[in-house]
Length: 388
Image 1 (cartoon, rainbow, N blue to C red):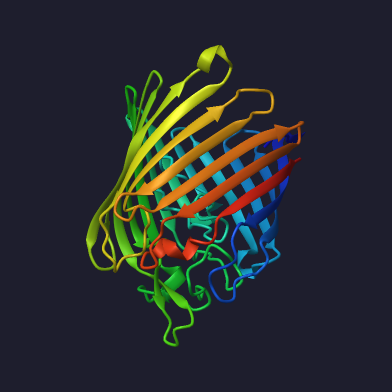
Image 2 (image 1 turned 45 degrees about the vertical axis):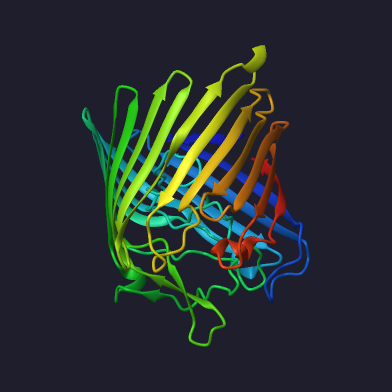
């Protein structure tokens, strides 16, 4: 947050901050699928509050982060969520947390294979970066030999998808009202996860295990053929993430082995980022990024587009007062020759505003491939955020 209000009462501390986002997406082409909004513009408003408390003894803390989004064109994109709503107790080398929280695992730029605790807010964006709050009980122990984190996840959050009116969706809308679960307990199935993280010299390492309801549903046609029905299977997944830092080099790897619906498969994404600090005697840093994506799942598993792809990009940080940053990248599918262009730019305006610009272009998709559904969804996105 750019600003925060901190007050003390009886020596306990409270911190409050908030932001409001006004977002506009402008689609370059007419919609491809029946029922989609015909207007090229799509307006949405989002708001987040961040309330944090810590007791006087400094061994307890709480967090409350509600999130609200309204979209004028797609009712399925409108959302009310609790990203965080937890209480935590800290005792020496242990921490106990109960409530809703957002946990991030992973190191790579393009795909976060190991990041499996929180459900993806698929209606927010196609990049998988937005997550829904996850109810959990979390116990962590920090030792000299590493951090061990154990999670009990008593309630499952279903993935959000664009609705009938929405862009960036499959040919048929997803029927989120009638999901199918492998477990008879459905959303009440208790998932568990375990993660170990540590560093050895310049290498940061993470090892994780997950057993429970897959965050990725299989989307199968409904009986009447008018929609896609999400099927949530029980899976077991082992994950590995590595990051090696040396001078201007940053090497990254994420890999998983998953026992899924029909088979056990492996997937991995890895690459590097090399940064030219103070390029050409300026204050700006320029980073070059390369990542390779592989996924060995078959056609019966949930669809992924990152199966045999190459990503090449560049990151520019001006390191100016306005925190100006730009990321430009292109993803190329080696098997199908499909191409995805992405531009992201951010700049602070004054003390309280941030302007973000996104541009995404989809090219070369064959009608037989899943990404053809997005072939007419090239768009430019403008977002102005006000921070309090």
